[in-house]
Each structure stands twice: as C-alpha cells, then as structure tokens.
Image 1: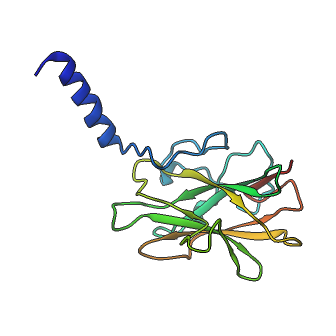
Image 2 (image 1 turned 90 degrees about the vertical axis):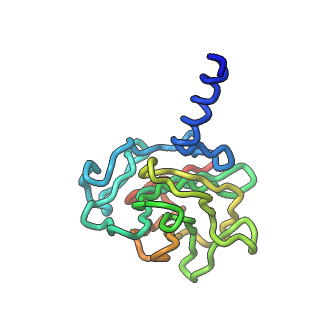
Image 3 (image 1 turned 30 degrees about the horizontal axis):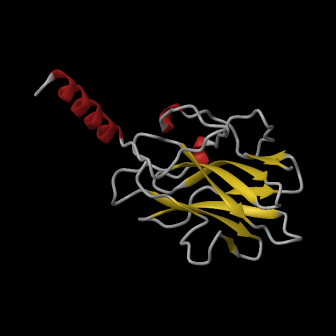
Length: 184
C-alpha cells in the first residue's frame, strides 16, 4: 500500500472506531456538559434554581443506573413561534441492544409534541452514544399549543422504556431547575 493510501485508510478506520455519525448532527450552540463519566458527575440537587450560565447536572442519587435520564433542557423560541428543544441525556449505552433511542416533550395533558404525528418521539436518536455521555441533541419546529406553558421532557431507552429522571420546563419563566428558556 502506498503511504498516502495507508494514511487515508487509517483516518477512515479511526472515524469508524470513534463512532462518527454524519447523519445525526451534534447540538451546536447549546450548553454542553463536560465529558465525564457517571462517577465523576457533579453532585447537585435537581431542585436547585438554574441560571442561564449553569451547566446541566442532576443529583447523582436521582440518576437511575439503567434508565435514560434527562439532565438539562434549553428551550429556544424561533421567530415563527415554534420551539427548539436542546436536551441533555445520560444513559449507560452499551450497544445497539441497549441505548437511549429518543426523547419526548409532553404537555400536562399527556400530549407528546412532535414535528409529525408519524414520528416515534419528539426526537429520535439514531445510534448508541457509548463514548459520548452525557450527550445533547436538539429538535426544532416543535409547536407548543396556545395556553400551554408547563412541559415535561423525558427520555426513552430501548430496554427499559421511559422511567428515568425527567425535567419539568415552565416556558413562562426564564429558567428553573435544570432548564433555561430563551424567547425571541
């Protein structure tokens, strides 16, 4: 093999090993958690008042070992009135057989807000995130019904379903426990 071919092959192999996925863009421009494992996660209460500069966190005691937990939500309203939700999730993804596969934004009446009624979740997650924990993904174009201001954001994993830590978001305030709201 020529030296340049070996280099191209090595780079391609490295990208595959790292798990690069060009079809699922990382959330850009949101508050991201530092790359830590669960044992190194900061200890703070999810009931602590969050500010716009706060890093996402959750009380280690509230994080379930096998459930997909929502740690932080940034809700940003667009000029057209729709919303983009930036959601930070932690789950001990191990393989294609056990990973966080989606998250939902749910009204107090139980309505799941999605871009399309055909979507399985508000945001479908396309692959395991074994080497990226916690991780943040966003979903835009979410229409919140008029008069609705309180929402629950929950995460789902393919083995245990829903059941992890959820974040309650109140769109009528600028911030709260583990969430921030940005209005146009």
